[in-house]
Image (cartoon, rainbow, N blue to C red):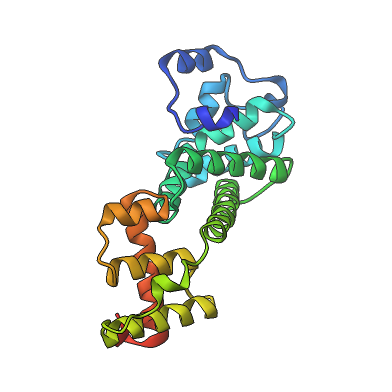
Amino acid sequence: MAYATTLFSSLSRSAERHLARLPTPPAWRATPALAPFTTVDGVFQATRTARPPAERRPVLTALLSLAPADTLASEVFLAALVPALRSVAVELCHWSPAEADEVDALVAAGAWEAVSALGGTARAWPDRAVVCRARDFARARLVAESRRRNRAVGWPARTELTAQEDDGLGTVLARVVLERAVASGRVAPLTARLVWAARVEGRTPAELARLAGAGPEAASMARLRAERALRREFGEEVA
């Protein structure tokens, strides 16, 4: 997707020089909020986050009203939202095991989908509307992919969690608690397996990462979230 490779990169000097020379299209000059500007770069600079919201939002609203039929208006609008969209991507990377490039692409796709859906309308908060929609779009697809991966991995063979005669009571209780948590839907099968591997089997962070098919930090965060869910459901003593 073209936007996935360009949306999250800063404008190069050559691109800035090109914008500085590019005059605003006639349709822009017929729009009151854009009429004072003679170049596309002037419009873009007016949308930067350093500007007060009272100055930025009328310009952003005008650009969104022209989008998506006006490709240049769409691109300038999305370029203005890069800092906010980058923050969304970073936020989603904290809990998703997906690669950062995949998250970036989903947020970019969500932003373009939002512009396509909301374009042609006047919004009091156009930047917020598009960013929130992009976040929801990317999150929904990351959650769906996570569920698909969990189903593919599946719950481990029962013998892996069955207590042996020489196992302590804590191991037996851990198996019961995890099976109940999975059955209730509070904990996903894969994250329950991570808790078991860490707490009962004593696996290392690297081993947990390989088991989860994700980075060590993502695997650790998934396990910690599962343990918090277990504490809420069964009480502090189970952890």
